Every structure is written in C-alpha cells, then in structure tokens.
Image 1: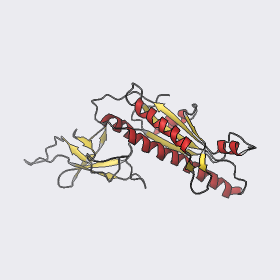
Image 2: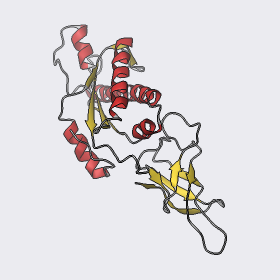
Image 3: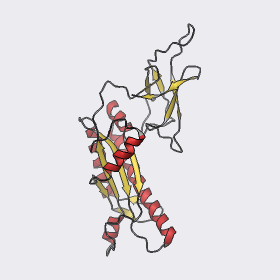
Image 4: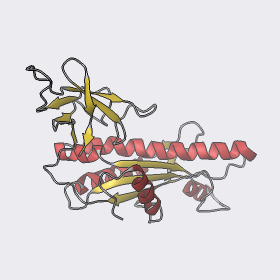
Length: 248
C-alpha cells in the first residue's frame, strides 16, 4: 500500500490500520532462547532482518521508497500463569519482541544509509509497534515446540510512498534556513546532536542581523530520538527562540 508523505497523526493512524490488513513482508519467529526477561534473536532471524534493512535502503533510490514500518509482536499461551498475570506477561513479552526487532532493523538501516539522501529517508521513516499477547496465535493448540515457536513471532509490514522532490529541504527554520545536525552525528537523530541552522536570512529589529543559528529540541515523552512530531525551537546567537522548526 502507499503511505502518505509527511502524514499527519490521524492520517498515520488510518494508514497503519490499512497496512495491518496486508500480508506481512517479514516473519521473525525463531528465538535463540525463550526467556521471560530477554527475548534474544537467533542468527537466522538477524540475517532476515539484515536483508530487509538492505531492501528498505535500496528502495530509497526508487520512485516509491519504503515510508513506514509496522511491527506486530505475538506470544504463545503461557500455561504456567493464570488470569490477569498471564495476559499481562504475554502482552509485555510480545511488545518487547516487537521492540527488539525494531531496534535491530533500525540499527541496520542506519548502517546501510551512507549517503545524505539515504540518511534523510531513514530519518523520515514512520514506525509503529503493537503487542497482541497470545490473542492471534498461529496454532491455538500447539503440539510441538516448533508450533509454539511460530506463535512467538513478530510480523513486519512495509508501506511505500511517493518519493519526495530532491530539492525540497527536510527541515527549515521559520525563515527558510536549513536545519541540519552536526557533521559527525550517527544513528537515529537525537536531541543530543549539535543541531545547526544554516543560511537563515532573518534580519531582526535594528541594524544587527539576528538569524537562527541553533535548534533546541523538546523531547516527545521519555524518548530522546527526534521524530516528525518532536517540537524544535530555532534560536539566534543570544539563545532567544525565533519560532519552531518547520518540516517541509
């Protein structure tokens, strides 16, 4: 399916709902160990995630690159627990499985995204995680460890969208200056990176120019990773806010 470019929150919710009705692009269901605290991925599943990361980065050069990733985690029925304790455990472990695959996939996408365009497209990816516990088991009455392992899985869905125009800046200050992070920054964009504003033309009151020069990000909840919903304040050389970062 096609995912809208720079979708608003309501549009994203609708698009992810439609995406969840598609066939998964990847199934991760072999875990090296079944532990309640650490759901570790096996080498075979990591290889599959690596192949998907390569596929996503390669798509960035096409007319319809991957724009969104949905990960749904699932669990097997735990016979050692009962009632609310069982449901809570299954929801927790299914959610952590989805996060484990998301984190592994993100790291490998960042590793493969070498050009400025690829890094920008990786940053603009939309992500959604869902944990369903044991409500959507493949085998409702598993008869072997292999069938139980298939219930303990993560389904990954990819959505594509129209490629943005190459000359369109990703982020700007209110006056049109380009917002960029420090030249040595790596990995997912974070509030800790040294964000700069270049080529801001703003002239403040009086004769002295007062362009935007830096950005201070307001973390969106506990996560320090910057996403399209994170608010950034553009500051002049005196540290005075001159407006919010604009995503073009």
